Amino acid sequence: MNAGPEISAIVISYNGMRFLPDCLSTLTADLADLSYEIIVVDNGSTDGSAGYVREHYPQIVLQENERNLGFAAAVNMGLQRARGRYLYILNQDLRFPKGTARSLLERMQGDGTIGLIGPAYRDFDGHLQPSARALPTYRHVLYKALFLDRLFPRNREFSSWKMGWFDHRSEMFLEQPMGAAMLIPHEVVAKVGLMDERFPLLMNDVDYCRRIADAGYRLLYFPDAVVEHYVGASTGARPYRTIVTSHLALYRYLRKYARGREYPLLWLCGVLLALGLIPRLIARFIRD
Image 1: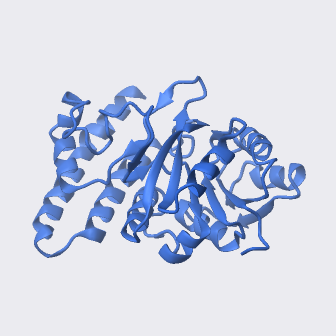
Image 2: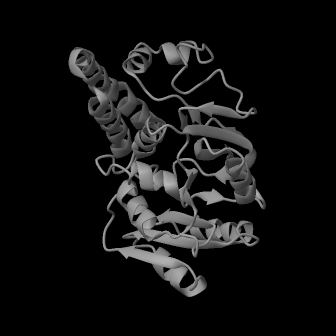
């Protein structure tokens, strides 16, 4: 470990040529004053993404998968190849203002209790993106089914999952910073293990945050560092499939941690999530 770089940046790529050039150019510029390596795990792209990396960034470690193995499996491949003291797990649809990585790194190094730190996010037009969340529970499924989270979007209870009451301008220890950019010490990954590949696309970051907290670490939302993020770059291409996948992934997450007398609540949540697919799919069809 001592011979490795300070940061290993792991970028997960899938048909990302729309975003990958900006992502890699701003990332390399942001990391330039640090000891680093960049690992790109390409999940079977068919748009020339892997070829672009080979041609323009020969110094990058490129893992080419023959097919899309899912986000969690791709992250795990990157984690297993990474040599850095800190592991920087990244989506492809990001741009990095200068100083972002150093700001995250210095804040993390100042507190040994932090097991994961995440930045604030702005979209490509500069608007702040809500990204701080609590871990989902049975009551959150109920609030969503009854539309209470939408009727009372800033209520501390009814909006407690997505933290609609939070202004995202203050540093806060919380349960789940958004997983598009996560900086984690290598020693934490060694203790917690790899991502759970039963969550191939969605909820893998939620599950990983829970496991980091269960291992005794704290998770920090740190708005002094800001990343530009294009929402839905990976999931927007298949919106109907994404809606179904999101409901299934949430159920699988709740089922993973259900215990004993909680199973009736789990069954109820499964029914509510299944019923909730109908209005979501109809609304999407109308928008299209």
